[in-house]
Length: 344
Ligand code: COA
Image (cartoon, rainbow, N blue to C red; front, side):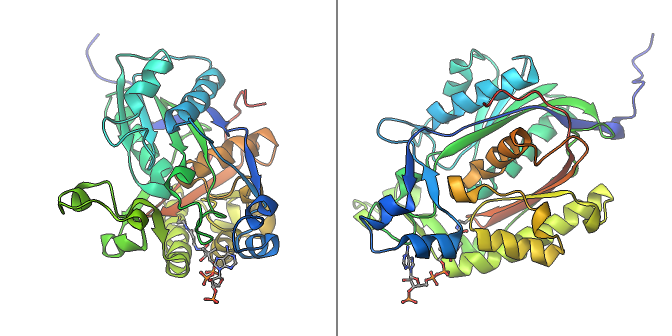
């Protein structure tokens, strides 16, 4: 009758039990872009691996995508019983307040803990660690994690260096308290950052640094800027190193990894990471050709799509890794579970 737990707390883990994604219907092809920018279909395809991307379009905000993906993940989990909503986004509807409470209310979840996490393209993995932490500490038994981005709203429409790369979308996952040994259990989430390079990926205007300067922002400061070539090098290095640490923490040999699900920044980056890890091309899940770089939403969108098309199957050892502005990076492992999918 005492309060002694019968389970070993070290065996407790966050277990994924639902997944979903949403892409806005409007598609922009490389041909569309090359008709209005100083670029070519061939340049975009060969330098990035991207053929088309989905864009949110006029009047659509991040919360709109988040609600669609979140609803599908809750349906996949078979229950809307969650005690927290974590929203990973770099493109909140407004600078203040956070977007998560509104998303929670629109999903019929008014009253639960709801907040945003900001880690740019690593947002999903930072959100995953946060959700797993809520479960580990008993703050919640079940958490809805959504990563949603409307990155195209940050871009200078005339900038050929960024417009071809990014697309919009959202992915979501429900996590529940479970055992570290069951399918779906999230392994150790490895996270890191290096603020010395915070200028490599940035929007200069709109925050306290620019607003406290006492003068209006120049137009270019309001847009997303990236030093592509430097970012490329850091991305390969950091994603590979984090992936190795996460794999070792799971007790897997690298050749036991069935699928690498890496942030879809550039097909050449993913190929370089796979090559660093010694993973052949057929173990690399990929959707960048159709969705582009959807920033923080990229990993869960890819998970949901790969589960739907069968390239992720129950029992697969899956290695997740991501990299983004900050700089930030992360990796995690999951033994893929059987899930009900409602995306199609
Ligand atoms: N069309 C045609 N030419 C273009 C172009 C475009 N859309 N964008 C750039 N170029 C040109 C450049 O002006 C440059 O010309 P130059 O040699 O005459 O100066 C040339 O192509 C090479 O530019 P560079 O930026 O060095 O190309 P790259 O091979 O590094 O590819 C990126 C550019 C952005 C695709 C690549 O660096 C990248 O993917 N970086 C990482 C992006 C990323 O991951 N961002 C998100 C962080 S998670």
